[in-house]
Image (cartoon, rainbow, N blue to C red; front, side, top):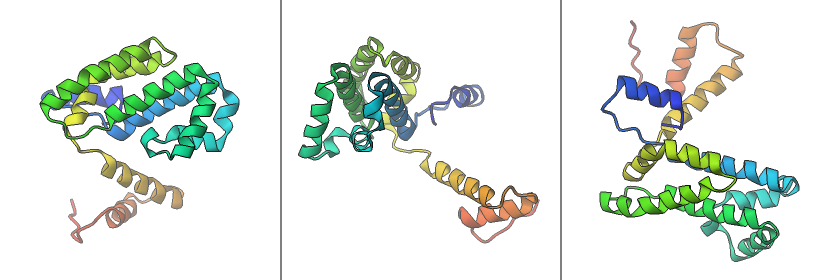
Length: 191
């Protein structure tokens, strides 16, 4: 699930034996959002530079050597941002781990806890608090590879249909359109 406290409380209440697993996309997006907010506070002008924004968004291991050098020159002028950027990259690298055995997950956990501790003493302390409160579902994310990407995709399609129709007045027509666009097997069951 995404990092919604409401969904988590519903899942805990109605499915007490279920393992709650955080959705990787949402966790990494949360990390990036917090980082960009702090970046905005330290350098509002740099945040408006689209090229720089593109470099900051990417994972460090996907940058060319020239891009890495350009980013390094920028970060040298902002030591606090440089430390936070490096922590963000290490955190994202840990969060992207998939299908770990229990043994490997146990070995990775101290690294994650150390990073969270480091973040709690930095301007990213609110991110550290969120990660701490969602620690168990985030660690479960290492063991399970499923995501809610398919559900998100269907939801986006349904929103687009609703926007194009300027709101449906007949629910049955909307339902049929959703079935058609989101994978219908040709059988309509009438209730």
